[in-house]
Image (cartoon, rainbow, N blue to C red; front, side):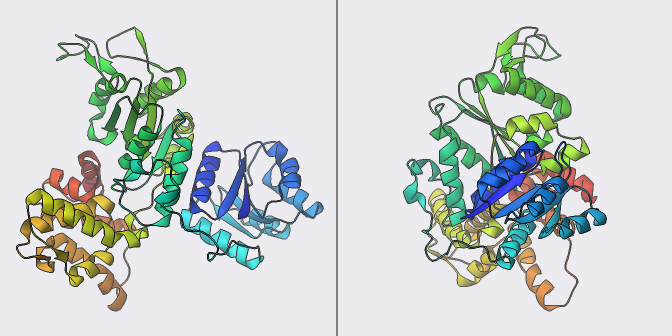
Length: 456
């Protein structure tokens, strides 16, 4: 496999790079935060590719490039930088850099840049023909993944990775769009861990108003505020000895983040209205559909909390990148909902399946589940037909054809999201609760997007 060294003084970047590249299944990855050790590691490591940050204390990226050139070290270097500096880029190129990338790192561009550098420099790459495909067969606890319907190798790679770190007590950060199955992965981690016999408590941080979250999360003592007529355990105490899954962690306010950081650092907390500290024996698994690197830069998310949560991390791919799973999921949900509603729908029409395969699924697995669910209720024959599909889906599923053949200008991602949300709201007659379920996001998140796009 291609051996990659990443040198960066930002631990968050290193965590992201290590997990993302390992999960791709193409690379062996070593990371280095202390740039003063760069020369030693480069001499001993025999790496194929170097991903190098330029702005580091003590030994800068330019220092490392000069060392590589002066010592004739054979390695393909890709520079990482937080600012677009043409003079720096030219200097780096003169020292032999193959390419450079701006932060924050785009995942697709990172892989494209690596593949381009590998091909251009004729670095030997493992043959796909000799590489054994991954499956559930190599897992020792495959039963914990039985509720995740997939046949995609990239998902199997994630399962194998999860099985390696799940037995530890490390915090975990799961990245992925809404509806990709973050809670299912969190449950699998819990079931493999030493805490499997204790409670798994799942909480959507975006579902609570900020002023209520502290009380729900930490609990409160009687009389701590109006309406607190009894003592109440919070989510942390409910999950004592087990696992607490916090979805949409990026929605937490900064004051709550400070208190959560104390739980992670000191393993203690205070109920609202109480001066007695309580011990927190709980493993935290957090999930986000936001880019937390951007949130940190905006001042909306604490960097120290990010480091505490991101000890192990997983990137879940959206359904549009798991095209081989669409048909599998459609038939799975057809069977599930036919049993629930006592329907005798035997198959999905080819026309419907083609529409499903050509759709982008912004709501991911949760959205295809809702589409099949609502269609089965309406369908009266033994075949799921186009006329039973939700109107918003039929309208949106035609967008790719219009964009491809009419010569119209392609829409930005924000404009696509805006139009899609509006169509779902129209479909539900502005019922935000129903619309949020279809879209696979929380009601609070939907309201924020409605305000953002002025959809009232």
